[in-house]
Length: 251
Image: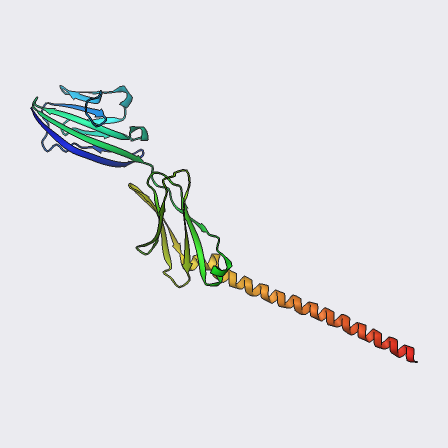
């Protein structure tokens, strides 16, 4: 017998999509015997068997598998996370050519859309013409969160703890590139959210802060001036009263 061992292939797929494992047999199969199994050793109970032009599927996988007997390709219909892992196929052609191929499936959730919200910024940064934006996304397997200025990555984060959200805070100088993009991605999908820094900063930070400081200063000046005026009036009234009292006493 002649045996061909195909190097392990890796398949990355999105939860709920179809995924096909292709043993890459270069010839059309004639009278093949095909056995697909879980695991890498090809010595377990078949999850799918094709022989004598008949297909039988393990009851645990019914409704999830579809075989192309002429190529040996196995398609998972609506892949789920419990179907992730190692698989192996043995194809016996005309009773003498034995082909073995192994596969490893990783199932990912589609990445969530990132959200941009206002970030807390200290007074010093605001008065220096800097405003901030916070981008966050729900974390899951192998998710990376990045801020881009044009096509350049300016900061990036990831975390193996999928129970926490990923967060990145961007500090923007008013005269920098106006368009920024927050991008969340995993190996099979990506989502983005755009930020126009000119509109964002004018709405959230610097201009509003400057106006607020100006109004506050003006109000303080008015209050102090009013208090001084009241004090002066009181002093003037007191002096007048004292002077009148002196005049009436001398008469």
